[in-house]
Image 1 (tube, rainbow, N blue to C red):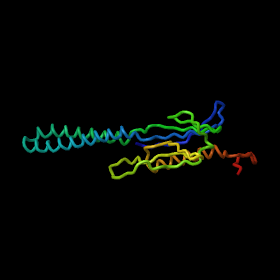
Image 2 (image 1 turned 90 degrees about the vertical axis):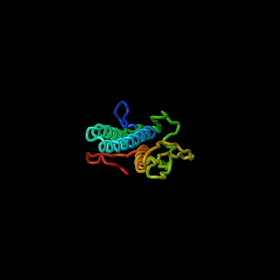
Image 3 (image 1 turned 120 degrees about the vertical axis):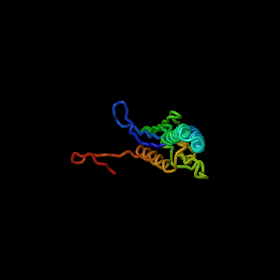
Image 4 (image 1 turned 60 degrees about the vertical axis):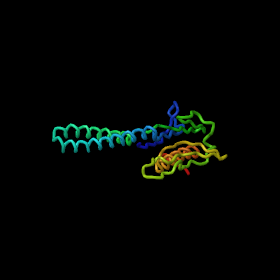
Length: 194
């Protein structure tokens, strides 16, 4: 899966900024696992047919070798295509919208009862451990912790670096809403006031 995350500024009907939308993708672990399983099967069967092709070539000559070798190449090609489909599979899209009035909306839950001012921290968490090299690298997620200690799971099935990127985007969006940038006009130019 190719991870994508971005922050989009929201605008109301009159075009005024009213919040932020953070969009990201999560891995489709079940589908990727099935594709990888089938790919391994095609690779093993293609390798077996390739060995048979060599034996047929040694026994009966070039005519038998070419037909069986072509079958082996097709099987290996299907396996390669399945691996490529698994790696380049688009992730499951998710989004959270954070509004200036304190509301939070998510693509999987709709409007939240929790408000932006209740969220104290956005952090990454390790959901599973990678015990072998063959295990999935989608071991992390992102959560929000409220001021009363409630944990709200936001994302799962993403790689550690991607989890950090998503946590930073969510934190920046909340900070921009909590502490809006104040500007003033000095000599005809808009400047930030601290």
